[in-house]
Length: 177
Image 1 (tube, rainbow, N blue to C red):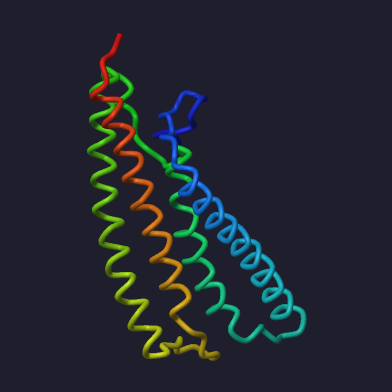
Image 2: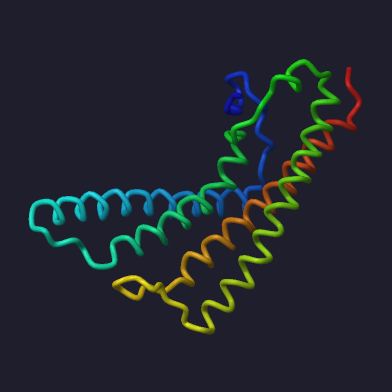
């Protein structure tokens, strides 16, 4: 297994449209801030728990929400950059046209999976928001932010899979010289 790495020998990342790339960069930046917040809150919670025997109320629920947001909001950019982990044992030995067609199939599979995640995530986010759903922990933290972040990340991934499939299909159908 390798991580696609563009010019470093992995699969080439498909070019994203400028608007899509900007959205992916924004989402990944929010994800990075979420990771930083998780790290700081988690570290502070461990310190206060061990040193003062006073955990931070709601830290678990906040970190739980930030984790979902951070993972899903960063997915599309990693796909755009060709950084998703992939097994290239067979595809590295294929002709370029065959490799492009396999990539189109892979993008179609990812599009289907993330399409379902986006659809059901949107339904869950809508319901959660209308109901004012909260966690059942010590601090009742709202559940809808994580569900909205999951949906937004999945929608970005669907758009990126469409862009990637379009690029791979163009490459597969283009005359080779």
